[in-house]
Length: 246
Image (spheres, rainbow, N blue to C red):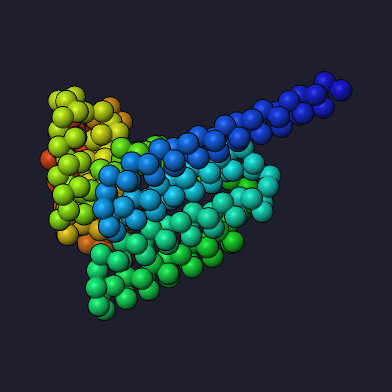
């Protein structure tokens, strides 16, 4: 009897934790989307899609942590992330033109199909490695809050007046940079630099130490990412685990 009551309590507790995580993902999405209204044109569209990606990742993480026995929900959550990332990639492609735009969208579609295939092949039972990855993703997702989303997009749309406004806001925030602000600035600089494919570089900051990971086509890109990160105010150290694609 005691065991049955304990199991029932654990199930209720997991459901409550899942519902709370999902509600937070929704609230963060609404806040981020509202911030996108300060942007114009495609920059606003990209901002909204980034907010959707952040929500999809947060919801997928909630499923992975609190609904580990539900294979269908776990697989669907991973597929939802792939679809949201695809929609974001397509919006970013709209900043290009001609053959470059077509190639960009083809690459985005291929990435989505690969991600969905991986989700279907994945073992539905999270391993320790998956839980660790999920924890890293959660930390990274927190940087895509309303402030993050706006500043990331204004950095990408460097030719718009929204960019200058966002950077002025960042400067006015004060000399002390929080980990979230550092992460945002590093990501913005990576996105704005044509020598670095920021979508393949993940950024995390803990007590001023910036950790870079992901994959890039060349060592020069990896070195450039480290150089840009070191140039951000408030960064005390840069640790890179960026790998060069072979």
